[in-house]
Length: 454
Ligand code: HEM
Image (tube, rainbow, N blue to C red; front, side, top):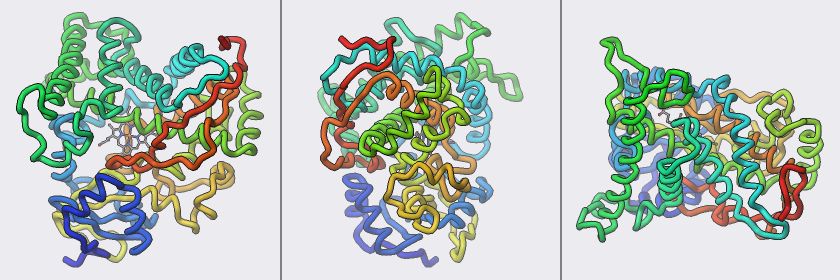
């Protein structure tokens, strides 16, 4: 089978480039080959698609024609486990989504609005006039607390505090003594005791799993049907034979949710704050809209805060936290535009590249929220959360968090960027679009009476 625009460099070089500077290696290929190109990193060649028609065909192809990527499966296995929603395929995947989707329905998610604003205000209460805060650090705390509350329904206690620390270590890469690299290279994964890098990682993982299993055990022992958290829904779920979810499956799905979304959400909000404070006309329009809201929680409604919503949409158009969708490995021939792909090839859609098409987004490098107020984009032209049967399960929560946190911060404090230097991108595999500096900002003045300036 002839694959389109194949990269010629050796696999090991392509893999190193991908891990050390994903964004740049990706941009180089896109500049050279255009809409569609093929990279070779591991077990299967990966074809990157970005034309909206190709994206549509990929997302709407019957999912039974695709399987998991052995490469990504192996990389994710040590943390995600074998039964996580993002690791399983076919009926097991459909079952996981059926089970988890109700918890992410927008009506359910909106019940967390007040909490998200409160958690944000709580962090802001700690700020003092004149000090500098790295926004990613602040946002991490808020978003980790939010997901722990949504998943477990807890907001305090020793286990809660430990969980927050474990998730922060996972997100910050501290769980991996040699860096995220260790997941990409099998030969580094040798347990030579607790002093060795892999041994340290396994100890970390055991600590995380013990916390999760302890919470599950306690909840099984003391069922409370009135609780509205995700774990309760998972514990109540039964298959056709009346069996509940086994503990290992619960653990893997809980980790997928706890770990799946906060670093993407954090990066998106940090970038939004960066754009708002770099562009005075954007800030002025945003502040005018926010002034019409009695409380930031009203930004939960897109109708009440259309410009705030457009700022968030434009942020993840320009800097989508994932440059590509999950890999879909072809199991039966798939036709995408002019190409027929045979079994064994991995296909992915690049939101980063589609979002930079001048025919869809004129002056694509320009941050212009108005484009989302002027026209509606299809799910294949604008797809920061992927699409089809694998579309991000947390997209309603992520969008809500973005609007609410931006609204709470902007209504609460007058801030300014600590530096006007161009922001560098974090250099980590699959994370090319995170701001390396985390966006440091100076707290100029508290605006709201509820937020005191020390
Ligand atoms: C701005 C924030 C976020 C972005 C941009 C984002 C983006 C994505 C993308 C691109 C995918 C792959 C979709 C595909 O291949 O079609 C994905 C999958 C996923 N996301 Fe998100 N995500 C975000 C936040 C979240 C949050 C908050 C959660 C959890 C609460 C979450 C949980 C997941 C899970 C579990 C999957 C795997 C779904 C499956 O395999 O069926 N994400 N996300």
